[in-house]
Image (tube, rainbow, N blue to C red; front, side, top):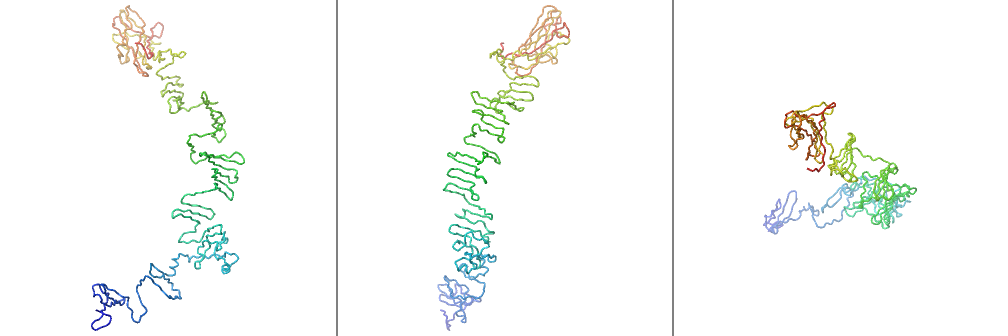
Length: 593
């Protein structure tokens, strides 16, 4: 086994590094001499090497040198004063002893030593002007830049909080004072730039937690701002909240009477009042102490909406609703159940509810704009009305159908009714049922009136004498029309000529076109030579479309042309022939066939 003494048989081994784990055996002792670090005594136990502290030379006995020292508890005794400005302060950095410079220590304290502003010195006991006299007599010596620096005495007993009043040689004035009855918070114009960038007017902050607080702010004008995160609740157990200006009450919330009262700024006898009664019944009123001109004006920057749940807006009886500022134009209940409209002070309209309801237009003409409608069945959604469809034409609509047109421009009256029930005597209809138009001449043709006389020799085929031998008409509501004609017929020299006549749908130019075979009839059969007669004939047309325009022509023929039978008409002098006449006459809806 190696040992520390020098023996012939054994010598302690000296290494230039620390031994490795696999070097030596338990109980071996070696010396490690490591350049730049020192000399260490090492021993192996339990297959691990252990080392003692660094060995010192004999000449340095009592002056141990350690590169790193770690202890659970460290006590240092008899530290001498440096006796000079070494600019070093011992500090602990997570358990390690280090130093900080004086500038670093000042920065750590967050004290604006470089920006100290010196203030005027004061004693809380005002009769003393020196710090020694002040403090000797129980006063507090402090500094302020405000000559009228205290509204509450800043004696020591009143100072609840003094910011920096004695930190080294830096002083500040008291900012939180209490004299036994009044608490004063003073604005500090000297601020810490680590907290703020300017002097603050937020003098009081009441916090429930980091998120919920209330801040009281007083500005240079003495204005108070209360800024709260939540709601502001005023709980007056005396049931009255007063708002005053310079000691004069200007507004009152009376929680007992449920009244809000707002007074005028110069005459508190003039006021506005809101009173709330049982069931929410609310009265808004004004009071003029000197007269009765406490008017109430509603002037919204938008619509004025009245939307009561009862759907009733009430105006007391005989009170008027004015539309011209209260002078001449109004609506009022002039008497019970009579609503009157006044314009310019004149009663123009009365609406009366009585045994016989009525609307009276007084001293006025009733005018409706052109093309507008006067309804008789409930207003603009109805379909029975009178309107001027165009200039000087008045139309009457019933059930959406135009029944009557009064045309002054053309001086005519047009009726569009399907059934013209107008033939009445003492309320009894004497005309054909629903056919008062029956017998009306719908069309009339007269050929040869004051014209040169002419004749036409008959042939055995139907011929329309000229394009004029027709009648034009519009079918009546019944669709039934009577066609009549009038013509003079001559038998010719043989006396055997017959006269046949038939209705045509085409004129002379186009040629005769049979309307119906049963409308081709024999109207004369003469036996005497050179006989001449006037023939009157007629046809009944049915199934026509009411309101449709028609034109029907007439053609003539004979069965034998022996003796040259003929027809003749017209004359513009005495002793000539009768005119050819053809007419259409309206028949009633019901005819017997």
